[in-house]
Image (cartoon, rainbow, N blue to C red):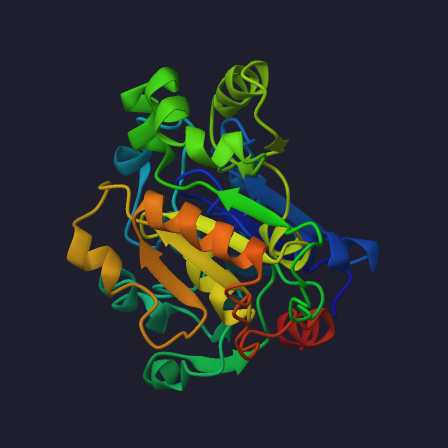
Length: 318
């Protein structure tokens, strides 16, 4: 490490697509010179970028590479928005590193054509070696996962721990708070808490549901902590949480809520034995059967590993 080297962490995407903060904090605590640009928080990022030109930069991002200011104008009212590709072109970093924010589609086809700009692809999964055609691939685990997920040992008569991690929040914003509450009321009536995505203006949605007596897991809750501390995770649509929970070995009830085509959702998570896609009515029946002891909580092998901060730091700093 050189004393003037700067490690630039950059996130740019819809809602919570920036996932690198834990690594940023880890390296900062080790006294590395780190700068973080999270477009959910940073105003006028261009003013942060300009003074870095010509400096010794190591660049790491979890952003979609093909998206720019135009794509995100509905979410970010900021003239200072800049994209990952623009940063690479402007700063010409000494090393560029990519880490995906999504386990379902770690690399979209639109992203793959730009991966050759990166020196290293930090992989959250063990099965992405085909990306070696673009960059060096190093498996480091899933950054949201800090510890292994133990299997559920639920026994009928105990409290069944169930949490609902909602996705497709844009759809439910458009449908309205009342519609959302009424649609998911069978879950809420059973005391099942909800975690909304970390998204602009979501606090108002949480406040509405809370006034209706719904148990709320704050939107900033680490999703793997939620998975770790519950026996069953309920999801909807085609959210990456379904895959995160299923690959952690947790039972997942993925509710068919008509946000995406039915066949697309039914094909989601095929091959992961603990994931079931079903209507809301059948989801509630499944929970009743498990509570009655007529059906076990279905565990699966744990596939994704906790994030290896030491290895990731080594890759960035060598």
